[in-house]
Image (tube, rainbow, N blue to C red; front, side, top):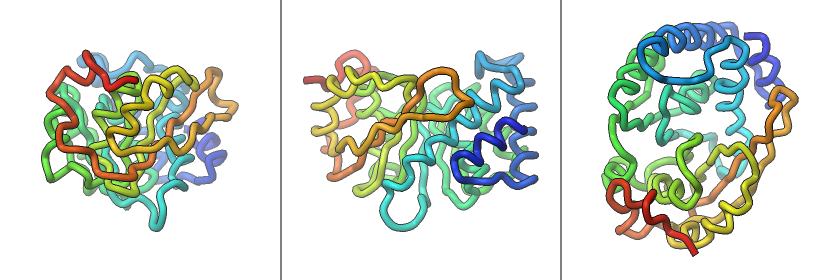
Length: 240
């Protein structure tokens, strides 16, 4: 995990030998399960270190927007193989993590790998964000909401901001600045109780493409009608 370790140091952190061993185990199990379940198209050892693990940990570049204590409660919407949530949990074991994934085969893997990595305080939900976004157990309860490559911003905001507590943040990982998405998302940001705080460019030599973080603050509660029922945020996003 040399490439991962070097990249993490550029983010201002240092991984312990235990954490590096956990990432090694994560890679090994991910590769084996991927032969049976389509978890990722990226499988080469060094690529996984950079494009999955280090990429996941870049979200920490936005944590300074969270006022007060470090994040206690984090939810990862559409986590797939556990990215970015599990890498954050490995590096910050004190975090209480909730992983949301609608495909049961993937949540079977998530439960397996959480047990293998011996990670505590992790909840795994086989569910759609549109459904549990109205559950008082989860609605408005999280310091940080994460999502990686799930949908365009107008749709994504409706699926994520309802989980964020007032004063919390939502971090969307994107491949480029995609300013047109921000323009299209202006109404959704306002209606859902959010505000754009920053667009952070990921300027690390490990990445050959242009990546960035869209960081949103939650300034008021999301009105009750959102998120709408499954499929509607994608078919009819809140735009203009």
